[in-house]
Length: 170
Image (cartoon, rainbow, N blue to C red):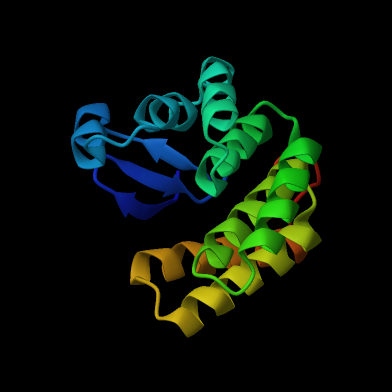
């Protein structure tokens, strides 16, 4: 399975474009006292149903952009991609012109990708890459946007599948 380096204990899966925990102990240690840690562990371990109540509680008690984004990620992974896209559309608009715009745009692309909206995903990934490059973002973030953009391009030109794709590849 192709991967892109993420951080301590996790990587990005190049097929799904989603984070995956490789070493839960290392991941937990690297996250320290992050109040979203349990949600991240469940979500990145492919247990979105178990993550949903935590995401709802976070948004209900403190609807920060990060908490709303994590809730959208849970919805995306539950197959509720239209809801996730709506949330990310709002978050991109709210964060326009700020350092958070790039991450929200990248996640909007992932929601479109998961929904099979490959053209829309490509637009979002290209925008996130531009924003990250122009801002001088860390190379790992630029690399994840570049990989996502390239993956969407390959899906559109028929040399790689996307989620739910049943075509015969070139």
